[in-house]
Image 1 (cartoon, rainbow, N blue to C red):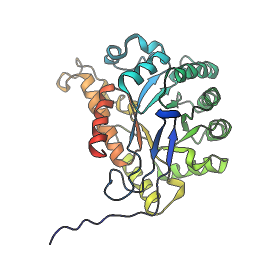
Image 2 (cartoon, rainbow, N blue to C red):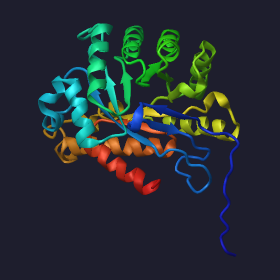
Image 3 (cartoon, rainbow, N blue to C red):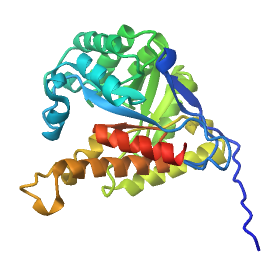
Image 4 (cartoon, one colour):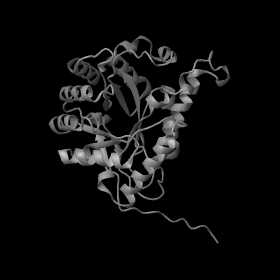
Length: 315
């Protein structure tokens, strides 16, 4: 008997969220099929790929990045321009590590001024991340959202601890897009989305960050969480989970021992840089296959490879 292909149809649809402005604005999401199931229906936007930069010269990145970026790491605006012109990601992710109260403790006003300089130097959409201190991030996101009003940035992310401040300032007052962060749990993802929409943030202005992990480090929890979210969004038409997903792969992939152990400490593992790239590509491709609509990368070689992956799978 000849094989008869049967398409799987769903009632639900992932919303499409646009970040940035002008010709370089990019859309995330918009599909009503499972990840990469382009043959089943409306595939929406191809997964988007961002490249990470930091507001201060990173001290915990492997030495290979010094060879790639050199002194430009000391100037985030110049760094962003180089990334746009040389590597051409879909968006740039600017992370304000320097705002950390336990580190340089840069003020929200300093961060906003730097964000303006970065935005003036690029045409690509900008995604902004904090220092992982909920209270300080809320201050930084408010100042940055005000400084970049009209730029249609994505603020990453609002958490249970600060969603009121981030949602009210970034989402409502300054009309930016808001990331809703949860920790690898469908119920927490649903809850933060509901809280933001009850606050008044338009559901079509929300992108989910449902958590991540490097492959081999509990990634099965990440992929099973994404599976449940997407099946609920598409199969059960659950509107509280129909936001596209963005996954910051870089920080997880470049923090595990396989990516940072020196060649002197692990001579049998090969070059450190190659190992890190492999971890980042493996994690990013697994996230996209699991349901991420956008991923954030660190190494330009990872970006290049993932462009080939997306083009080869999606076209």
